[in-house]
Image (cartoon, rainbow, N blue to C red):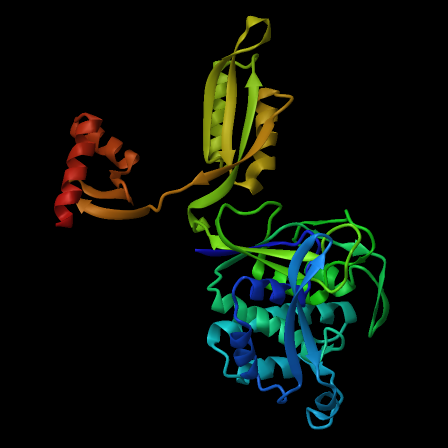
Length: 396
């Protein structure tokens, strides 16, 4: 699976993202050819790139030059504020491929939704000023073209700096992060460890909101290439460069994160422990177990551990506290690896039996085997062996 990890330590904008993706290997010729399919007025913009230095690091800087004479009279003499409805239609009617269109539409939709919320207008009616017309169309569609060209399946991003101070916009002087940017960064890790200045633009934030998973650290991956996209400003506190790591990683479907809670108990009876386990399992714990431990004053005690999905944790902790009187519980996030398993029911010589099938073989359900062993007066392991054999025979 191809993963793109964006290290946005200095922030992120549309042009920095495009520059980093060009640096990763998207050919400028390919980008120009694809952008031509958008049907923007012939010659309304030109792209150029150059290597620049930002505080000791070099990166590629992209300039989207808007060619003025076309700028005034395109779109049937209207001034160049375009509504979201126009832009959406323009992308839909272009001859870009389906995946590129889908990615571009997704980013623009997020941007339009955020602007609509902030300005109290309908999504369709949002007009683009400085995020405006051609500039943001080029940036957003270019990112979609690049992700398609590089076959990126998953995008991850580091924590992003918010910046501070004020920025001059078509809406007047706005605080940084601009309201639409703040709206788009909901759900992402952000921090304030940087001086004033706009570090994340609305377009940069929309790219993340539409495509990326936020994480504090880089996902496990094998890095093949690194691209560096330079911002226009040169900040005093850090190199204004977006680093893009392209590589491969494992599909995450086999993982999930569960909570593990552990507490040490030295004054709880065996009966109370047994009852607590029963209650925890009924209340949705995935697993519960006890370990014999030695505690202070040489008292033998029990360590109670349970696993649960994150949103069951509070209720299960309350239950442990009530039943055991425990005063402290340690909690960890654990990742578990789950193999692909299917459940199926089969008619056997002993009636309907449920089986679990995984890449490592087949297992008849314990409860069914237990019932049959009792009814037939056979040892449990004999029932399990015969059911497995019958299952394999039925397969052929």
